[in-house]
Length: 504
Image (cartoon, rainbow, N blue to C red; front, side, top):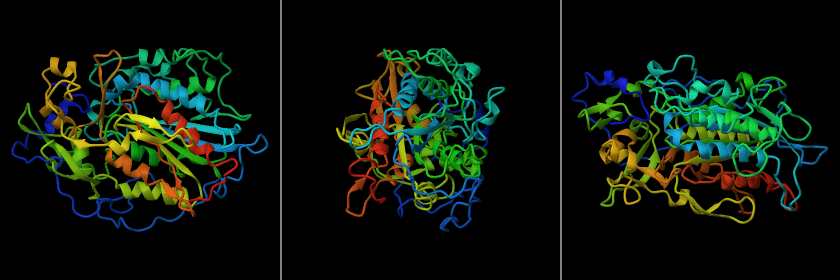
């Protein structure tokens, strides 16, 4: 059978485990499943399992850039807003079919960041910092298969044009190989002079290149949009145990080199937006013994024995009740048992350490495996109001061709069935849709942990008015415009006739 998210040669780890028991996704939870904080702010090292995970971290230390506080400017030419945007992109081989959406998303991001308006429809003047990193933090099961010359980003910036790293567009197994996913979107090889992209107001670190249409939508794209497309095309040679939440934390660690000094990515008095693009689960491993623990593995139907597939990310990360007669699970909650970094740790990091302590607004925009959004609010912040995350169903795989079931024509041709999918991913898809060409099936796996973190950012102000800081879009959607509109809407709705709004 085809293995798309883990190295098949790791079968050697299973040789002595023929009698080990498997762990499925249908575990009845105890407690709330969120746990405590295990993520120190100014260090990229993981906490040692067994340490006190309920202690409150110390506030942010001053790291060479003065005090951090509420933005003082309102987006005028004399006082531009500072907006720091982190984009975490899945660079595993399952993203090969998502390249068109990814490329369009990055081009639209560059466009939207120059078109943000306040509540009165007035354009805001913004100094943008945009940093791209990947979901790859390496992993013991991936290290033997890391391509020569490839280094996992581990939360550090991707700063070179994809045309300088075309070898990253070949999967570790050698198939697929899609260099055109770079060359089609990055014909001029635009890259910043530095670790991240700076543009807007009067400042830029981009070359003076000709605006051209790089995504085929009939509109010329600015140097900023071109640079973001060239950086956002991160390739498909990364580890299949994706760690978007931990990559996010490391990228935003004030002690990281790219966040120090006068040219830091993360600035004082800035607004922070985080975009995560992935078609799989978060597998931010805290205790690497998980990778050798057969209790978290599922049984390979071909081998008849436990094997470490991507299903361990679900088995170690989420607990559910069920399934019922329809194969659906209920009351799915994030686990906090020390194997993966806890959801509460990331919530604490964003809400308290980067939010309340610094008085900084933090927004998140995951493009993940939730149902396709059917409608957005017509008014700022343009958040989803139909479909999407509220319609999320956690369920088993259905052994039939799509749309009646979850199998693609490619799966059927290769003899892949629901048992194979269940072994490979654990939980079933959160979304499925026909891609391009129409025979291609685009899917995203249900992302419980990322939803918990994102939705924790929403709050209510002193008058009970909801403050939207989380917009969740679907990796199965054909267009990124909804997500990008929500980014501009969340930022812009803080200013104008009803602004500034009190913080929730």
